[in-house]
Length: 193
Image 1 (tube, one colour):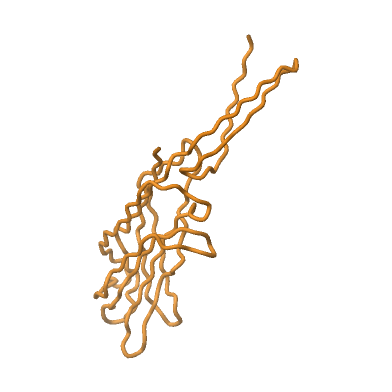
Image 2 (image 1 turned 90 degrees about the vertical axis):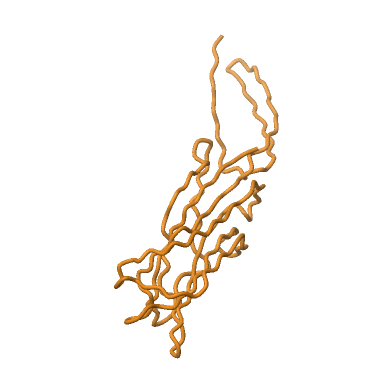
């Protein structure tokens, strides 16, 4: 008996959704067989942490900056987003150590629960923005409401992600602003039935 094994992977499939498949195989002699079945993909759970900010420029030349920060986890697309969770760090004095990237611990964490993913919630993004008060001259702003999409891998051996890290670069966003900082983002993805 001569057998041949075939393996086919179709990606991406949305987590927690039901799918149907059908396959027909035939040999050189005209023999054929049909297989139909259904299955449900595992649900997705993600954790996103904002452990540290790094202040490159506090926005004030000779003194400390007075800055408040926001951190956002969202889903959607480039044109329409939906907030999952937002964190706020109240105004505080910050210093950039003469523009040498002073770190500040933040410690915000979004702990997701197992979810069924629809096309409009397939992507997960993170962003941050900050405002530095310069009384009476106005305010400096940095960062962006729409930040970066997490690079969610797809494929049977690649989908689980354990504590990947990158730094979100939040550059000045208003004319004349010098406020500039980075946010460490640590994220994990897991799939379960």
